[in-house]
Image 1 (cartoon, rainbow, N blue to C red):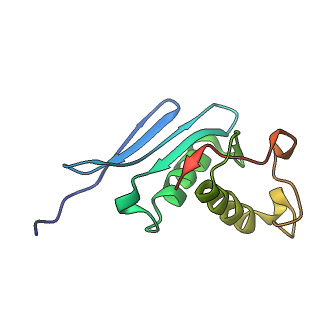
Image 2: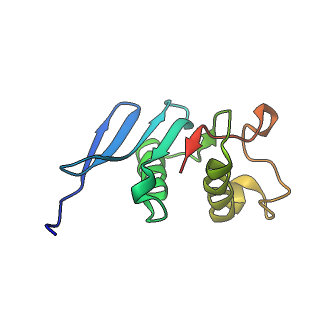
Amino acid sequence: MKATKERINHTDGIITISDENSTIGYCRYDPSGTIEYLFVNPAFRRRGYAASMLRIVETRLGTALRFSPPISPLGQHVVDAYARRHPAVTGDDAGDTPLPGRDRGRTIRAAC
């Protein structure tokens, strides 16, 4: 099987990761750091693509991220993992302390 090279395309507010055959994942965000949509192709999940896209957004914007409603069950795992890595922003106990935007449902529109 021939190895394929992944490409990251980053335009204002949108990140896509693809190889020569398919879209691996994409992320849409606004300038304030709100993640509006995050998706990773099921064939590529659990390989760090969602976390990579979130790091790209954080680096580009220089701010902690928020997640926009609604949330999928798989997306909740991404939000919880983000909260565990950012206790200064989300509180020491990510399970009990709201993320920014919790009043709107602590959510991410995602299938990661």
